[in-house]
Image 1 (spheres, each protein chain N blue to C red):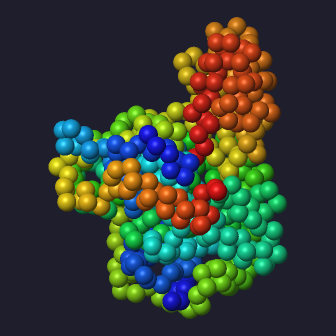
Image 2 (cartoon, helix red, strand yellow; image 1 turned 90 degrees about the vertical axis):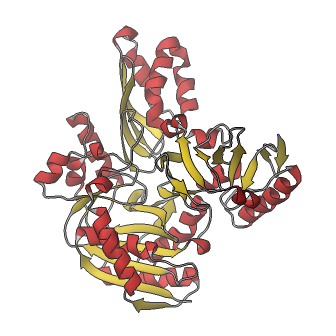
Image 3 (tube, rainbow over the protein chains, first blue to last red; image 1 turned 60 degrees about the horizontal axis):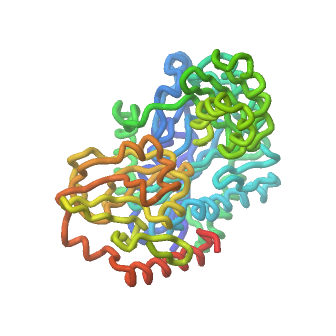
Length: 336
Length: 147
């Protein structure tokens, strides 16, 4: 067994997604694992499988010339461009850890190891973030496509936080600015790293973790066919529209694990919270029936862990008003 | 109900040992399917479920739905073949109920099931207990679940 390393260099937006979708789709049981690298030659926006197009401001995407694609792994909308190196480890389902948490632990740790070998204090945190110095430096996701299990990540040499914030559809400009502020604080880049060094380090780290020597390779005929088929599928309007989903409850924008903004409501009650490191750092509550107690409820939320039980304990003193505030907040505590 | 390795199981249900799913064989011939407690735990916090369309036939092992947890998107493999009769709208609306109440959160119902596939399921307290204890031990050895 060897680790096949497929490096396509700069490719089109759709090919940068189709590459690893196709490699996974074509993976046969017992096949050698594959580590793929590519960089998109053009900027685009990509949605996780179960996310709504409505999370994006499609007019802004069009004005900026950004294609919109959907991937068959999880996570939220992301802005992707040529300043990012994509890596994907693909292995047969039978070789992959069966538990999702274990999958990330085993298959993201080599990426963190690779970055540490280059002097970046990287670590895997909160199941599937790669962070350094408290900032997320690699977006990740995973999935099973055909018989292949794939874990995908990127290394950001630069990141236009403003553009990422601009393509999101949010209720108002203050929420966009809040998202932008959090992105600047919690999403970092690695401009000092040479691409070739990163790829070499990832190759070494995954080869070592899997106990298999690495060898450079090109996609085989079946893989090429699967990649081409995924290029077609990824650009179908029905695919881009996504699966039918339950109606959204409010608007949540997650920046990284433990950091998100939520704006939502229930009945006449509107809430907005900003969460950092799992705790509410700012809160606003509006409800005409609360007779001036809304500000007190908002103050009570600040500093609490962003979990139902913790917030309920803070709000119990407000009786029915607290119950209504908690109902409005509840959907925003399920973080995606 | 009975307990195996700290997990509570329903002996009246059948279980798919491949994907840790429970299967309730209903009086009208339908099969109702959900994650067993170990399946729910190892899948992680479920945040989205998109079922295959009603009326679609699926062979054993083919995907009944696409499930997302912890940014992992994967199939819900059919424990038995059959035709998708319904998906549970309450669970689709509240996917976290899979983790909160695995036996209450059925995901998909099949009808016209492939009876021959039932042989692959674990049934009866003894068979279920033996299989489940081994499955828990395997996951613990892998570090996938806590001791």
